[in-house]
Length: 283
Image 1 (cartoon, rainbow, N blue to C red):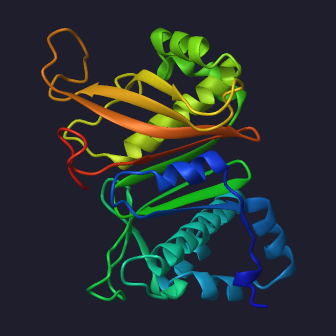
Image 2 (image 1 turned 120 degrees about the horizontal axis):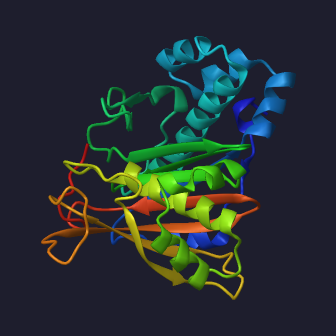
């Protein structure tokens, strides 16, 4: 068995898997989760250079070698492996199925920091997917989609409670307390942070909303009284009004994120299309 194939990708919550399947019409996408503790164990017992040759583009191998901090090194490698696996599955199940070796895929970044798939070694007829990468605690998470996308994973930590005034308004806190009584306040904050991060990654506006300007307006419940299944968070942002929502607003963009709590982690993903959101354009 090859080193790369010995990696085990973790199971995703069923509510997210089904939610991805119900994304925007025609939006083909794949979502992958990697256990970084398992990756760390692999690196202790196997040759890292061989694993990198199997998963990384030569330019990415050079980038990784310059990351000397152990935690950052592991997270960066895990994120790249995770997104390469998401891309592999995306291409296999695309309208023009293709096997693309992971080292042929190079992940680059736009000036905004948004990750992109370099087109260099890909067939001109292939759909170049949008991608998003996240990591927190022991997991890396990646999404590849035919539409602009954002994904975020956030470990439930007390840190968010200490800084909640930076991203959670009193109205948002009350809404979550009223509609999600099966979750505690730290879980509310974890879900809200992950959801807002996924939206900010998925969309680009001329003036991007701040965390407090992106307002949670609605929560749709999906599974059971404990609310541990999938939830749909709907956010609003006033376009062209400096992000201030009010009675005189003329254009409000709405964004939706599918979220869930799973084993102490908040996971959120946002899929969008240019026609779905006023003022939206691709990076």
